[in-house]
Structures are given as structure tokens and as C-alpha cells.
Length: 196
Image 1 (tube, rainbow, N blue to C red):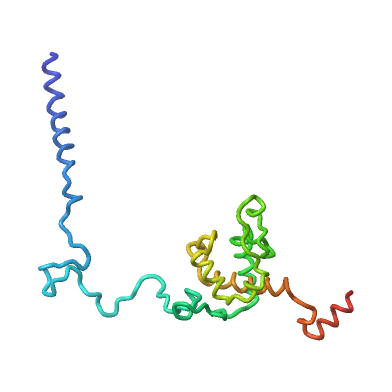
Image 2 (image 1 turned 30 degrees about the vertical axis):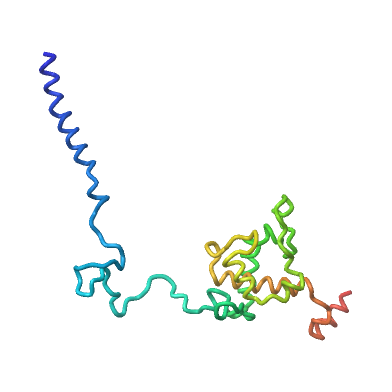
């Protein structure tokens, strides 16, 4: 009885073993293929790749507006004007994004004394120094895009339109922290003086 039971189980076990060994072949890993733009005898022009058909549309944004996507005019010149229309909504969006992404280091005032600085991290420069008040607006966009010093790039987290909104809000923040009464229109100056 014992030999019969062994023979009964031996055949299916051998079949399973044979199938599992056949599955270990490396044909899927070693498929014949061409590397892009490699030499080939298959096509008349000896290229392994075919040209892109006329009228092909690229996927994703085309990013044809260099100023909007880089904050630069040419390779080295940072732009001095925001390439989007500055509206109340844009500034409100900029304030919202600034409060989310920037205040942990820069604080809500932009003075560089955010919460992480209070916990011992390096202090970023204040936006209210002469150097940063005089910096072109493209500087802020560029720093958010590429990072600077201890600050990492935010390009993967903040889309370009929001980076411009933040840059516009930084300018408004700089103006608000350094405003003089003489900067106000005459009617608002009079109203301010009456309220004192």
C-alpha cells in the first residue's frame, strides 16, 4: 500500500516541478530589442526609431512661455515684472500659498523668524532687507523653482502660477511692512489723521 501511495503522488509532484523549472527561463528579461536611435538594418535609413509623424501633439504642457515657467528672460536675466495680471484674487491666493509653504521658515511677516527657526534651524534672510526689496521679482520665482542655500526646490509642490502668486504676495508684504504715511493717497492720509 505504501509503494502505491508514493507512486500516486510522485507523478503530480514531478509535473509541478517540471512546470516550475520551465517558468525560470529568462526569455522575458533577455528580449531582443533596439536601444533608441541605435543602428538597425530593419529600416532603409538604418535607424531603430521612426520619425515622429507630422501633426503629433506633445503630452503635457508645452511651456513655450519661458518667462512664465523660469522667471528669466534669456539665460541669465531675472524678470523685473510679474508675467501674470496681479489681481486681488491672485494676492489672496499668494497669501494662502505663502502661509502654507513659506511661513514655517520665513514667518507670516517674512522676517525669517518662522517656527522651524525657533526650533533651531538656520534662519533665512528677512524679505525686508534692502537686498531683497531691490531684488527683481524673478528672483523669488527662481528661488522657489530651483532652491537656494538651505532652501530646497518647491517646483514639484507649487505650480508656476502659484509661485507667481507667492512672489506677488511677497512684494505686497514688503510694501506693507515698509509703508510710510506719505505713500497713501491724500484722501486716505486725511482719513488716517482724523482717526488718530
